Length: 197
Ligand code: 5GP
Picture 1 (cartoon, rainbow, N blue to C red):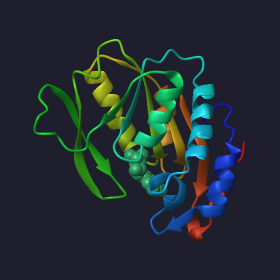
Picture 2: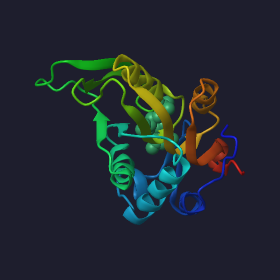
Picture 3: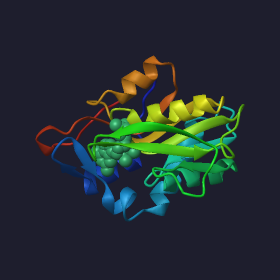
């Protein structure tokens, strides 16, 4: 866990009000993050990400389509750096790219993610932003793409982390700065249990 994890209270409050628990340990936040988007909350969360990564030099934001794009853009806007979203399907026009496999547990299948070599460069200092951290497979895919580009992953920011899946502990053990705005310890019996400080 983060040394000084502090939940971002406006998000926790909103999840308590509007988050829905689905079978299989999935939290649905379609009414404010994943389908309909609350831009005011998104802005506040992005300011919080910028605050948490304030000591880091960052020249690019990276995310995976589709649901990471909105928070990534807002963070990129605040930092005035470009935002690259990794694609889940290789565009036919794209040559010269980095690619790797990612397993999605929500969809129960693997897919290839790719990024043009034009937009991820040696020496880039990249911050990864995504909506959820579960088993960390998306994050591992990003680590691999950044490695292929000889760029540097300076940190990872997630709106929601589910600590009963093991992505967070894996990534922190690997030495990454992982910042999650809300950490959920359990969704058992469709009760949302938040990690406290
Ligand atoms: P991971 O790769 O860390 O196992 O899973 C992260 C990805 O799966 C996220 O990008 C997100 O799209 C999706 N995901 C994982 N858990 C949840 C969840 O509880 N709710 C929603 N809406 N998406 C999730």
